Length: 421
Image (cartoon, rainbow, N blue to C red):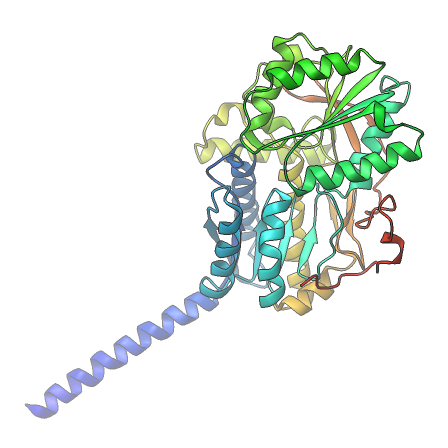
């Protein structure tokens, strides 16, 4: 009787051990990928689509056999537009969920919040949104634009005859690091072009700001002093009331063009765009670019949105940060294949010089030293259907300048990644 009990106990413990081993093996058979985007709060209007694009890209890679024979397993968290919570969620992804890479953040304040975590734990973050530069971390790969790939060319265009020959500039932004640093760079650039401070107005509003009546009235008054353009670094859902107020006060693009750095097809989905026709956005990709790679990309996204029954899938659109997310995940997967490992140090080395035929119509290259993509620059004009017509673009991809030459002392900074903490 005792012998039979011992045999049963041994069999049970062996079964449990085997189950534990199979769970370990099963876990080891996937590569965990963190997705760190705000799915609630003021930035959800922009970031939710990046989460969905990441999931679509992961599905696409898995359907082709995964990476190094392993399936990618997404781990999605919601930092809820709460900047300190970004750091907590980043630490959770790296230490508890044991992800091998993270794709995420939109605002620079969220990226600055997580940066010490990634540098401390030697994690790997892919950041997909245009930003102010002034950073070059070994633990971040920047797949959005630096200022010389967006902000500077956009203002040069506004100053040109084709862009309206602007002489005065109203710099309007959300009150945080990206708009303030970008406008610091732009002010120095405008000074270099002979524009005086009396012809530059600079205004900031908090996240989630909704009353733009006084600000738009101020833009109208300021524009009476000469040919004026608005440079908007307003982020998140505040763009909706801002553009609605432009329409309410009849401020048309022919009078005062607005060029936006954080408004794309996704943000315009919730707005009547007819009064906004002619206003501008500067990006490195638009859904409207006409090439076979983009046609397949857009079709794939719309089919995915329908299959997953995403909110308002009938009007699903692609945009620049979504393309940057798509490119970043594919480049990371290529680097893991090349390295034969998900080890951060090996993947970092393998990412240098990676190329990818992007929906923009260009083959993008990850710079060998500065962790930024070489990207084309495009300026698009808002159309009645909420799409953009490309009115100007560079001949080819431009190498990023993370350290702007318009900020004193940047010429002495290294053109390679160095920990900031």
